[in-house]
Length: 329
Ligand SMILES: Nc1nc2c(ncn2[C@@H]2O[C@H](COP(=O)(O)OP(=O)(O)O)[C@@H](O)[C@H]2O)c(=O)[nH]1
Ligand SMILES: [Mg+2]
Ligand SMILES: [Zn+2]
Figure 1 (tube, helix red, strand yellow):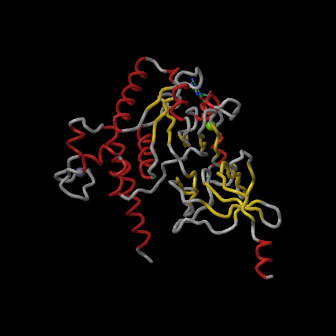
Figure 2: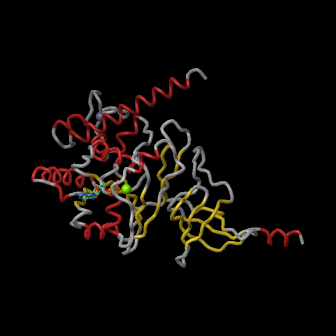
Figure 3: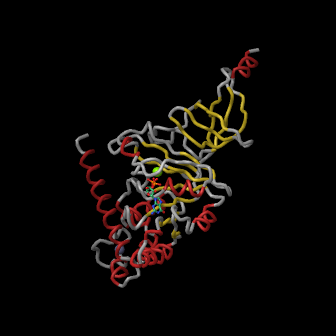
């Protein structure tokens, strides 16, 4: 009898679905039949060693069960292929999982209004490498380009596609390049990131008929320092696949790299580093470094190397700061 009572109150599994939106304590889960149900969490899903504000993320594949109170609960998460986290705020020790099970990380960049810096792009790409997510660049607002811009865009396309990051040119305004971009994204779960104002919302509106995201608003300003009002959202693409729109200008690329790791996340630097004299070479000024001559001989781009050095600088500073912090204890 005791066991019968237990089965009666235990949540009954109703199926497996995918988390498409997270609004604070509620998680919207899309079930295989296409309907979406609002779920709470039952159980402990913390990632070992990491304090997260949201144990379950958009993109998670989860088991949904109905409890005695008739509410739907997430009772299990399938192992993640990958996931992206960021600190909830600059000073916070808590992290926020932005998305899980991503096929592609796309950075939307522009040459003007606003001009995206190569360091921002390279930091994003290095972060994608660190998370093991394939990455690409979408260069939007091509309708605004003059001849010089077009030349720069072509130079970026040659540089980045040579490293292994496809580059798409497009205009959310005129529609140029969108059909091709739609083909690239079809069937994939793509995380879309980029500075505010580059046209992410406009691109989603153009790619997904019927979506009506607000554009031209610097809405992120109202959300600085909080993490409760901004959530990732998954938007289905008409031809299959989804786009994950992540909130906030900081979006992506605030990962803490260890100094000796930074070079691993620049594929062309990593390739040349095999020939450095010392295994722990940081390619800054070490004797026998193979990366520095490769930069001088233009096998590695100067702008990529500059980005590498500035991320390395930050990593070294963060590491020494951490040491200082630890010493008194
Ligand atoms: N000229 C031009 N303007 C664009 C394009 N895409 C977006 N915009 C404009 O850029 C501004 C910011 O766009 P929005 O989609 O809100 O950018 P988000 O902050 O990245 O979501 C808006 O005024 C858009 O109308 C484009 O391809 N060409
Ligand atoms: Mg937007
Ligand atoms: Zn080296």
